[in-house]
Amino acid sequence: MRKLILLFFFVSSALWLHAKDFTRYVSPLVGTQSTFELSTGNTYPAIARPWGMNFWTPQTGKMGDGWQYVYTANKIRGFKQTHQPSPWINDYGQFSIMPVVGKPEFDEEKRASWFSHKGEVALPHYYKVYLAEHDVVTEFTPTDRAVLFRFTFPETEEAYVVVDAMDNGSFVKIIPAEKKIIGYTTKNSGGVPSNFKNYFVLQFDKPFTYTAAVKDGKIDPRTTEAGANHAGGIIGFHTLRGEQVNVRVASSFISHEQAELNLKELGGRTLEEVAKAGRDEWNRVLGRIEVQDTDLDRLRTFYSCFYRSVL
Picture 1 (cartoon, rainbow, N blue to C red):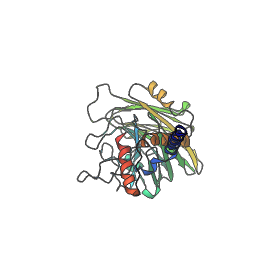
Picture 2 (spheres, rainbow, N blue to C red):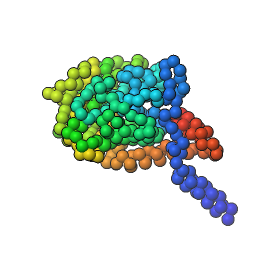
Picture 3 (cartoon, rainbow, N blue to C red):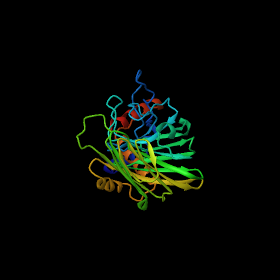
Picture 4 (cartoon, one colour):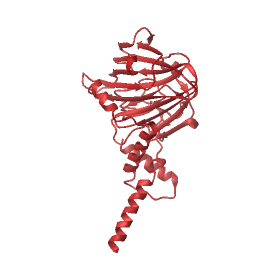
């Protein structure tokens, strides 16, 4: 009887911990109200899996700015794959994507959109924001090496997605027949080998009605390929109001072929399915330590720090 009671206790505890959502105590925005002159954390919202290869973050800072997301900012320039450990060390292997409406814009100032924290949801495994100037809702949820984006557009014949491979030497190729963009970035802040590249692939679920390569700021709709100091690409669609465009993205430090393999982490899952798997993985890790406290702020502090410690 005693063994049965103990077994029931352990099974019940395991089921309870599995069901408890520790991610609701985590705020990836904690520590983002920092400046060069005064640090209150020097963090950014790292949307990722525990110990993931790639993080994704909304980018409010200019290209190359170590403070890539600051809470007091009111514009988003793009959504960036990042590996940045701190503002002082800065980033490496970064590139970004950004939905825009109206006309194709590559310049980070012109493509930027106002946003409000009231229209922003930031969780360890999922991010959502409303881009007011483009009337676009952006959502994304990552795996270890890939990420699934969902853009909800207004009704327009001028809906675009910008891919910015950053400066320092980059390459972008648009493949309309496959609804795909491939490329690489060499952007880094030192400490990398001479042949360093971060290869990436973006797979869309909607045919392109517009394509243009970007070479050092010049948008050229006559070509679909660009290699330059600062390369990029822009693709466009006609969208109905509320139409959702999904983009599967992955990268590799080895090759484009490996990036394609890493894309398989997403499989054919929906954004909700990938987000649930991410939440479950975070709860498995965060649930290793259960803190009992009636003070919600202390719980948020603990689990937000715990989340940072396993990135």
